[in-house]
Image: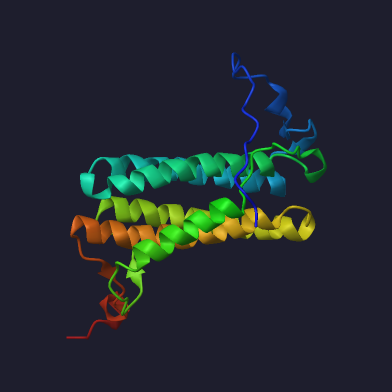
Length: 209
């Protein structure tokens, strides 16, 4: 079992935003290697960055109502974890240091605790749910679907570069489950009914008059 650890604090000065080094369609990893911007590893941590942005939106929405303020704190922590995940994905396995920020079993177990605790307060599902009913629910479903895309990319990366690749997959898998539970929890806290899938509400299922 992995204990909590102290990661290396960032030491950088972002005084200049553009360097023109990316004009050729390449970018640098933490170890200095240059990769094409559409390389799988870049696509993977770029999608994690996209997910972090959407989580930020959901975090703001959750903080605006005292009934969901607890979730805002959780989402802020997840943003830091996603940045840690991006750090490890932006580093080739041979360049990873002992204090390199990363996601760990501790992060995954915490998500599991929160999933179980919140899910125990929810009514049983009798149908699939659709995103919506309230803004926070919809935003969390956007986060969930982007998280699933990041997970798929991480799975592909784990096949091509197996070393140290499974923690990102496990974390993203658990986070996507958490985002689903949190979307339902938010609707319950806000007193807004969930939007259930009704196959016969499709245009093709309407009766011909």
